[in-house]
Length: 337
Ligand code: FA5
View 1 (cartoon, rainbow, N blue to C red):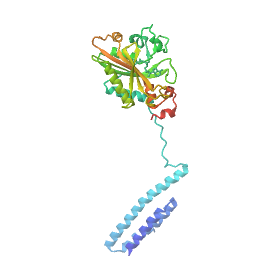
View 2: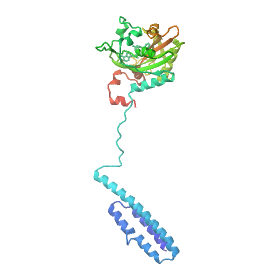
View 3: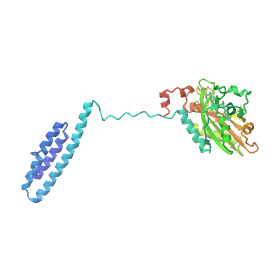
View 4: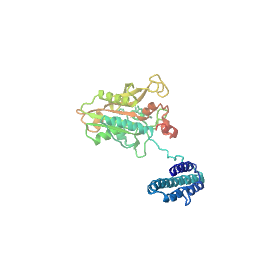
């Protein structure tokens, strides 16, 4: 009989517990069931006249209910207090927080990292050097004497003391060879400067220089390595072509074009309707350059290349105007996340 009553009481308690929404309702509930004259308390008092066994069993049941209820009431009270605080502050504390927007590497830096990673895999060491150069490293040691017309093609910015902003990363060939003994393989990424400005030419741009010197390096190695790099960067199906060219510091010299990945050779704005985009100059190291660093040309051979990083980024991402990379428009930069 009493057991049934307790069961009924439990049901009633949990049903009305669910309906509690305010602190005053909570207080009323506590008094009704747990207060001095509350229902659970009264039942507990009644038990003293019961036989021992029953007293134990029912006492346990009621005490468990009591402590369970006390715990639940505490957390309910906290919940109500939080909600009321939110209302007071006019805030919704359940809204997700505001996160600071996280930046990303500039697309040019991303390409540089990728290139360094590809060439590192092929055993090339990554080196860097100064952007302010002497004429000697930038031109003379590269077989471009001061009367040579190739100096005009790379018109640059001179400082008052006669130093200049390097026009290409090729001076790093000289610096690397002087600092090391052959055999060697280096790549040197960095900024270069020229008096040059249109949609595909920027006065400041980035190149990466490559140089491999060994006893048995041939033009085949040059073609193999550069074709491998192009396929790694632009995909396995990428077509490349080598055109004869001229650089005073390589002989023979070539320029490498890749088929435009936007129009696949048909011609579009990114490739200037040519279907192909020139991305680098290269060739076998000229004996005069080896002479400038005291390398014995009877033993050592080598190839070098210099590629334009913005060109790679333009084809890779279909960017038509090189200036986009340097105008710092957040919308543009965020698309490279
Ligand atoms: C050179 O600068 C040579 N030093 C490359 C070289 C290195 C040849 C080693 C042989 C051996 P060139 O001037 O062609 O070559 O420039 C190389 C690449 O830089 C070009 O193919 C092009 O992709 C890029 N480039 C040149 N001028 C600009 C410019 N103003 N803006 C953006 N990219 C440019």
